[in-house]
Length: 155
Ligand code: CA2
Image (cartoon, rainbow, N blue to C red; front, side, top):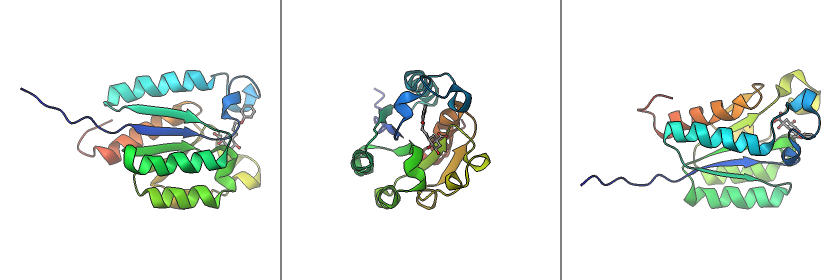
């Protein structure tokens, strides 16, 4: 009889104001809602054989706690930390401490925007950064995580 070990889920964490996606500023962030992004992630994760835990918080502390939780419960983290990307030493430290594969992602190309968005405090604490591809940034981040977690498989 075939026995499969169930893989830990990938945590997809979303920071402040991302609950407003699709409801405000469509010219910058597009028309997809966060619910649409979650559905897209679930569909792509399924094709990669990954389980997904998808969350959003406007609280820096809650995001830190979820990263701590991920250390034991997740196989990797894809994080759009929103504006905390540019300000949060706490998220940097939590991601370092988590010590599991992690990818930073952004919908917009932060390097084409205001100077204060050009700095990421969390980038040094993750494996890599994806930005500028709209909701497809989530798909690309999941594929990147998959290639780290399951390096013998394509996708
Ligand atoms: O491009 C991204 O994904 C960002 O992480 C989005 C953040 C921004 O602070 C980062 O610099 C880049 C903003 C989150 C979304 O904020 C909204 C505000 C109003 C309406 C819709 C979304």
